[in-house]
Image (cartoon, rainbow, N blue to C red; front, top):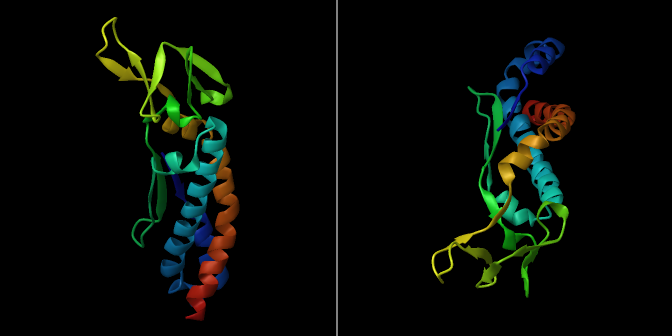
Length: 172
């Protein structure tokens, strides 16, 4: 879970603008934080998808954003801990099993097969059934590993977003 909370910058803006900005700050702060949160989500999805060699859509559907409000000036990104199936990583059926690019390296997983072309499965015993899915990397874990990169990008973008939001709030 990644949270952006910027309070020190708000005090600085209040001192700079004086009485003019006091009524604009409660409107501008959540707008700037939410815009930064959307940008942070986009950067995180692109980064994690590239590192995992997965599609951005499959990563994006497992990340949620809790927006900032006037009473709660925090934006939170929550990444699901669920893992993606091996078939999501350019999985294809070969004679030796399913070949997939999970963790950035193409590897054949023996004794696995693709079910309906979308799910990599493995038999549990010698019998035909039961079968169980085979998973690759988890999105939540990869998101946490790259947390510092995503937060640094967010802090770099927040100042510009706050300036734009203040300008819009003061304009009307």
